[in-house]
Image (cartoon, rainbow, N blue to C red; front, side, top):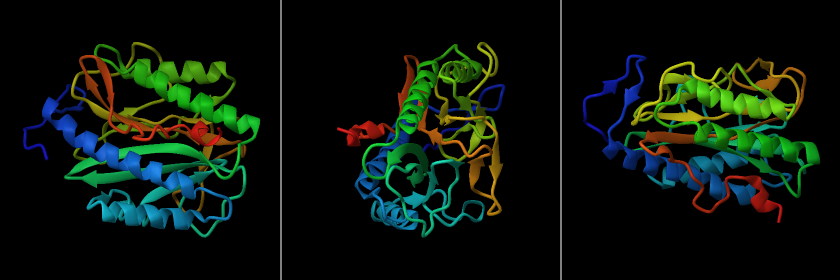
Length: 272
């Protein structure tokens, strides 16, 4: 764990040292490995509660800690969001059906460092054409946002890259949730919006750690929170998708901490 005195930008964003990247890579790799392992279990008839229990066990077996168990009263090691659930879906006894698309979001703590990532899965077989296209657009939007994440650019450049691409595909970007700074804490400045105007917002600097995690809807962008105070759904019941990476800014651009070790970040690996 870093013992260096924190350096902050004028916007209150922490700048980590080059030596801190190793810790983030270790945490990010574990989170990505867990999402690799869960893939074979995402099948029709399986409950989201069972998937969460597997994830919980794997985090413990790795000697790590779940960042979400106990966070603001949350009691699970993952969020599992199905079909029109945008984010923060609570694992339960709900069984997956063939063709369901779902996002699984995991955050682990390894030696004090937080690794946060999510990706899409399909329960059994191939998704319908609209769902497949939604996932592809969401994945591509994330990667365009990461491409814009380099020193000298602004956070508005990231949001603009994502929004302009998504809207050109006649889909919408969720405004109610955003990415965030992380590192030795779960959530920290800045808020990373997935929409915005190019050239606005704080300037990116080497040593910034944060997530980019666009949520994209087939319909309108509005969401609502269910009575459990966690689950966010699309107001128009349209399908939603999300992909998330944790990154660090280097002189050459974005260093992705949460790459899939087995190349399983995009669900097309199951469609061959």
